[in-house]
Length: 209
Image (cartoon, rainbow, N blue to C red; front, side, top):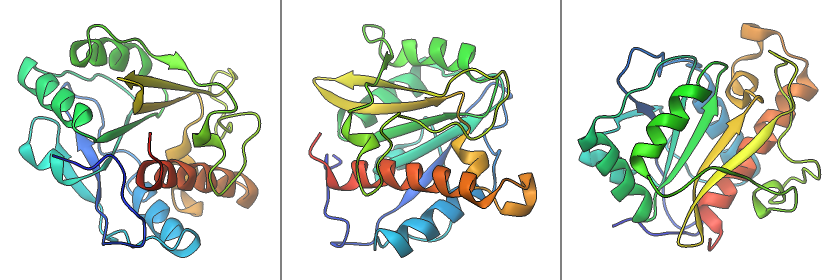
């Protein structure tokens, strides 16, 4: 069973990207997670293993990673076994960060309803601790890429009072974490994305939630 929180300096931590079925590009943003890990290790003094690890949603290895990152643009399908495995992971102390890379929303909401049939995503208020860890985001999730021009929103799934899944929507944090040459984002935009990502990591590994 996973621990709900650990001290960031206590041990080498492991994070992973989630591989899922359905044909969506789960592998998108190849440089994003390594860059976020590097940023956190430098600025939060974490000790996160530097390589990007991949874990399948139905695998028992899911339980090795306190933080799992999921992204993509398209279709997502969870089998009943995969949904049960993900539910057991999340209710045992794991944390899933879903980062919409534009186009993920209609699929992920349906599939997460398989994981938690009785839970719904709720928008997190701007005073939620995830926005106020090392870095302060008084207006909530930062807008990194425009797409439809809608405001960025942060949603959560809460199980027995604990935030088990954070869903960054219309923000595209992962694009901001990517190598600068890929999207040519201004440095201040990339820093917003990295700082928000660091807040999520800090929340997962240091907060009793």
